[in-house]
Length: 274
Length: 272
Image (cartoon, rainbow over all chains, first blue to last red; front, side, top):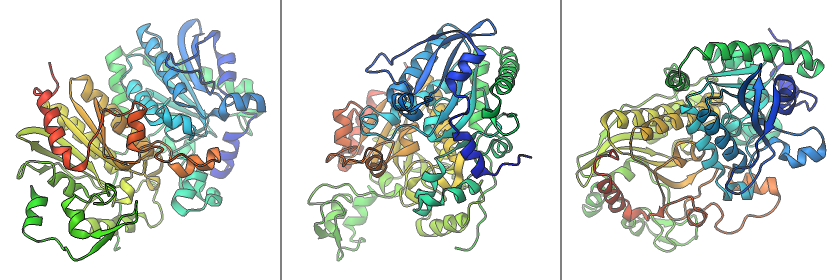
């Protein structure tokens, strides 16, 4: 059992000293070749992606990028993608499928950007297309939720054959602040929301939403990056080897069936007297 | 159709007056009803319930409801089961979507209609499952699929399970379409969040009712984020049409005609 409460985990998951997508790419992959742009209208730095080698083998790697200092944060919009980011991700994933490369994604975002231009360019459509595309890919897809995975903006990179979570990462329908603000009209009740949302890796593993929880170093991933990298490396190696046994259509089917079963056949809500 | 028949027979209460939430004008209830719950002054398309909508679109007697799915409470969220039970009594629905088999001018299709009376038509496990089953049923029977969306997005009370319905429904639609199925997505007021960001945005044909608010983030969240006021008409159907996200805007009185035309143009259900 973890000794951190859900509120503490949310804080840990957002800790800027935690390794992010760029750090994982730098440590776990070699020869990273970044690919930019959606080929439609723009480049979104909040999603980082490209081709690299994982233990010698070419893979496509994509993840949310928050940036490490204020200048980078601003350039990466604090990890909140615009439609251009999601369309770049689609482009890279289609290419990965074309060339038979596995896809590895790192998820760490406060959510898709709720901005004016993002809406004008079809934020909803861009996310929807990511979900549809990923659901049918005939290459292995592994997602690792490394920090905070909030809402559709996180899910858009996480329709994978295996969804893994770092021990203190969180994954939820919306940020606890947004959740509290919608349900209780009071964003300041975010801590209380953390308690009811079942957003910890342990809860999600029990609920069948994620398939693996990756142990963090004592105190959290930020205390010992190297140890964290070793754990993620080992997990990716193991999962990839397992998925390599499946052919393209079987990979798509396994992924489809896994998401198909989510929320299916849950016990009906208790019918109390209104 | 049933609506007109009921009106002709004078079964609707015509004495009340209705104030338009959009323009503020008051009009006779009967005028609203004649206009299918559209403001006779400004043309605002008021949200309507799922059965009413279907009754105005389908051939009389062709409605066959598909199996309903009961809602779940995976977070054991405080007071949620009681709220669901209350809404069931108020609306006659188990959850926020109705799915059915029906015909328009004799052509069969599978229909999904969201009902915003039920927690803003938000998508939890029951809505996600029902939409998914409708897509699977349409795929099995090689029938076109028509979905009218109206939703505040993912249902908060079911947490991450609601989020996963986005992936599940998008996957089901993708699979249906990849096998040649025709999917017509019809946005109605308002459709936002996780429904816009999943099955509602994946139509082969994308349509909307006039004035419908359609977006990912809601306008208030955007205004708080960018700290400026949004322009008039932002995220409305006409705005989306101008920005390339819709094929056409369809007034409520025209749905039957437009859908009949589209079903006829895809006579074999979309298969070559």
